[in-house]
Image (cartoon, rainbow, N blue to C red; front, side, top):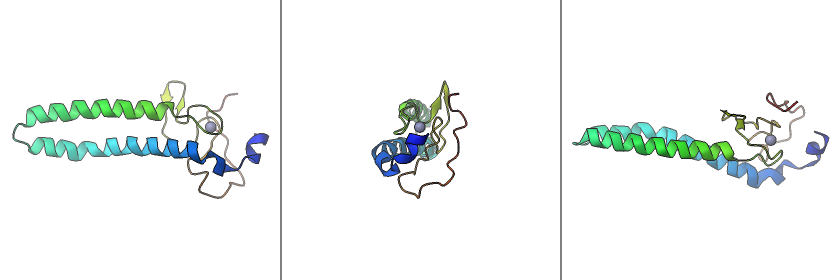
Length: 119
Ligand SMILES: [Zn+2]
């Protein structure tokens, strides 16, 4: 932990941008479901379109979750949102507790310890 305090969080910006962009893609895909399903249900051939929209959405969701799972933390190099088989899209790294906006905000006087850190 001592060496982590010496690094300026701005140096993590490229890695954190990648984490943030993958989170945005995931949330957009989740939110797009309802309007897409509404359009499909309003179409004349709704049974076919509901099936197509749902199957397409599930495929995109799986891809987005997979990319969000494998994105690496710029500080510790571990998967940012994944600890073992568990996907937890929290705003802090599950391994070193680096905040997702650490490059944008002031340094924390008392940074929290990672809940799921290796012992
Ligand atoms: Zn980390």
